[in-house]
Image (cartoon, rainbow over all chains, first blue to last red):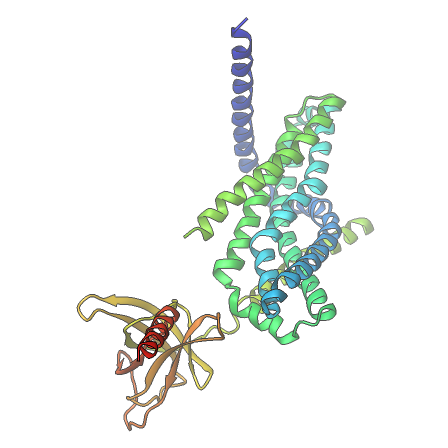
Amino acid sequence: MILGPLQLLGRKGLAFFERLGRGHLFLLQTLTALPGLVLRPGLVIRQLYSVGVLTLLIILVSGLFVGMVLGLQGYNTLVDFGAEESLGVVVALSLVRELGPVVSALLFAGRAGSALTAEIGLMKATEQLSGMEMMAVDPMRRVIAPRFVAGFISMPLLAAIFSFVGIYGGYFVGVGLLGVDDGAYWSQMQDKVDLHDDVYNGVIKSIVFGFVAVWIAVFEGYDTVPTSAGVSRATTRTVVHTALAVLGLDFVLTALMFGD
Amino acid sequence: MGHSRIVELWVGLFVAAGMAALFMLAMQVSNLSNNISGETYNITAAFENVGGLKVRSPVTMSGVRVGRVDSIDYDTRAYEAVVTLSIDSRYNSLPQDTSASIFTAGLLGEQYIALEPGGSETNLSEGDRLRLTQSALVLEQLIGQFLYNQAGKQQE
C-alpha cells in the first residue's frame, strides 16, 4: 500500500527523463539534417511564410497595444514625480529588455508553435512520415529541419518588430495624447538605452527563446501519440511547456545579463 | 508558380521588416548615434570624492559633450579617486590649466564632469593630469554642515 505512490513517482520520473533524453537525441538528429537544406532553400522559404509572415499580424497588433499600455501606465506613475520626460526610457527599456522577447515568444508559441505541432503530429498520425521513409525521403530533412530553421530565423525578427512597434505605440500615447515633449521622449531614450547592454542582450534573449520554442514545437509533434487525442495533448503541451521554458529561461538570462 | 512567387515576396518583406526593426532599434533607440566615434585622447584628474560618477558618464564643456569617463580608480597612496577622461580629439586645444568639477544634472539626475578652460598657452595632451578639480557635492555633508551652523547660531 505504501509502495504504490512511491512507484508512481518513480514511473513519472523515469518517463520525464526518458522524454528529456528523446528530446535531446531528436535535437541532435535535426541539427545533423540541417546542412542538407542548403540544396533546398525553397522548403525553408515556404515555412518562413507559414511560421513568420502569418505570425506577423498578431505581433504587430499586440506590440502596438503593449506599447500603448506601457505609455499610459508609465505616464501616470512618472507624472507624480514630475519625470514624465523619462517616459521614452521606461517604454524602450521594458520593451527591448523584457517584453519584446518574452511576449513575442509566448505569442509565437500560441500562433506558430501549436500549428507546427499539430501539423507534424497529424502527419505522424496519418502515417505520412512513415510513407516518406518508405519512399527513401528522410522526414527529418524534408519536414522537421525546414520548420526548425524557419522558427529559429523568425523569432528574433518578430521580437525586434514587436519592440519597434511598441516604442511607437508608447510614442503615440505619450507624445500624441498625453503631451510629453517629442524631443525629450527620443533624446532621453537614446541617452539611457545602451546598444550593447540592452539591445544586444534583448536580441540574444529572443534567439534563445526562438530556439527553445521551435525545438519544443517540432519535438512534441514528432513525439506525439498517433491518435487524435494524442495530437490534441501534444498541441496543448507545446504551448504550456514553451511558456514555462521561456519564463524560466528569462529569469536565468536576466540574472546572467543584468545581475552584475 | 504564381502562388509561390507571392509567398516568396511576403517572406522577403517579412525578413526585410525584421532587419529594419533591428536596425532602427540600434540607431534610433540606443545610444549608438551619440557615441563618440573615432580618435580620442586620455587625460586624468584626481578628486577627493567622485560621488555617484560612473564609467561612461559624460564630460562636457559649456554644456557640450566633448568626451566620457573612461575609468575610475582609487589611488591608495594619495587617498584620492583618479578618473580617466577620454576626450574627442576634435577638442585638442584645451589649455593646460583647465579645471574639472563634478556636477549633477538636475536635482536627482546623473552626475557628469564639467571642464572649465583656463588661460594657459600650452594645450593638454595624452596622459596629462588636471591640477584643479572640485569634488562632487555630497548632500549628506551639506546638510550636516548646515545643521552644525544652525546649532552654532543658537548658542550665541
